[in-house]
Each structure stands twice: as C-alpha cells, then as structure tokens.
Image 1 (cartoon, rainbow, N blue to C red):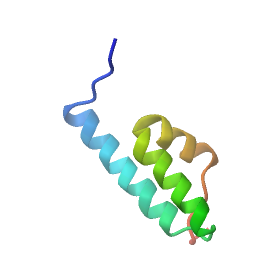
Image 2: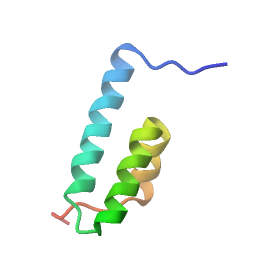
Image 3: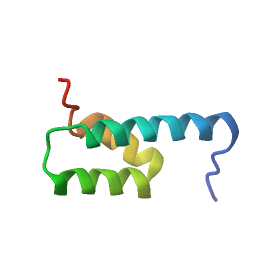
Image 4: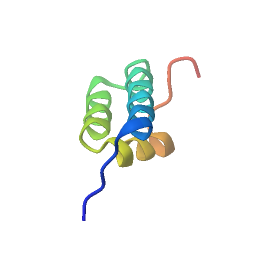
Length: 62
C-alpha cells in the first residue's frame, strides 16, 4: 500500500511546503529550531506541513 501524490495535488503540496519554508525561515525562533522544522517538512511533506501548521513557529510579521 503506497500513497502517491501527483498532478495538481502534488503541485499544491509543493506550494504549501515552499510557503512553510519561507515562513519558518522568517520566524524569530532560534536557528536550531528552524533547522528541525525545515527537516520535518522536507522529510515528511504532508504530515510535516500539517504539524507545522498546528504547532510551528510563527512568522516575523506576527
């Protein structure tokens, strides 16, 4: 059993992950925290994005 994300769904996930990376890098958290969040989103794209969306660091604008 495998999950395959292709087409429009894959593109949407890519855009959301890029948005997450930009927001993580723009946050006021420590460098170590940013690296851990970026690795989580990179290794587990969908699950990592959802976890970041719920519990991740907020951007510098907030």
